[in-house]
Length: 331
Ligand code: TXA
Ligand code: MG
View 1 (cartoon, rainbow, N blue to C red):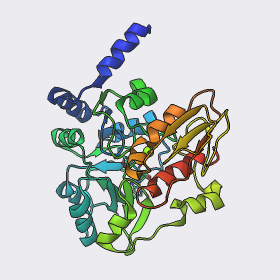
View 2: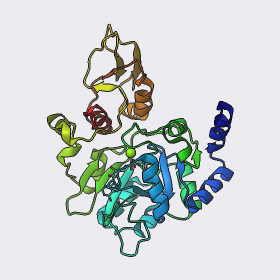
View 3: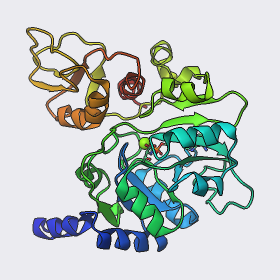
View 4: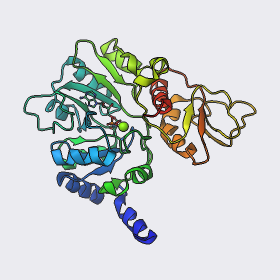
């Protein structure tokens, strides 16, 4: 295909989220096609959660291992409670934070129509109501739950713009709704509420501290801490990985390295390519910029991206988690 034809096709694939485009997206979803859409965290690769064929297409498009379950997106807590068993903690968290960057893992209701492939055969489901007008409009028009992982190839950096999606998945997606850059920039926090003790499965866009103010202490399995990643890198699957290697906690960088800063840049910095996640040291701003900055620094001539230390509090936990995985040895 020539360049002009390619451009024409990608122009049709990317759509401003007008009412007509959202209606077209809903029709495509109901027909079992894949539609990428913006959420407040990252772009999602959506499919009808009840269709085995559509879910299989997600795994194929991402080359995602089928043992890794997908998050099922719903408009609100009432829709979620039709799929999973809500308990008092789930109700309290949904009231406090939905729509928002929080995924709840709960026991699946018997008879729920969600594809078993979506939950990788588990009798639990991760559910979330996204806080984005385009995602909300799409969910309501589709009239059914939408399974959606981040819209990137498995193991790669998550997309925070429609262009990232087109670059990563291209023609595997029927339509990409372009809602501009994502506000939060890191994926949702995943909390497992299936046991008596709530557990943090993935730090994300909602800080752990905020969740604990509502339901009390949640446990953090060791595999989700950066310290454990460093002690036992083998246990941490390489993920969110740019092509270049990452060097964390770097206070300087050589000329042939790139530097990803946070707060004031170190004096006398030699790196040729520099991005700053947040010159004023704001963690929310840093999270929003993280994935786009990693992509921008991941140039063919850059072998190492040196990364400034990032505080561990609040959204810093999610940022450090993603950086730790990006730095982990490659499979
Ligand atoms: O912010 C987000 O969560 C984005 C947007 C699109 O909503 N989605 C996202 O999906 O990050 P994905 O597939 O990239 O990550 C889903 C995470 C994985 O770590 C998966 O293992 C976990 O959620 N998960 C989903 N269902 C689960 C379940 N039933 N039990 C345990 N973990 C589950
Ligand atoms: Mg992902």
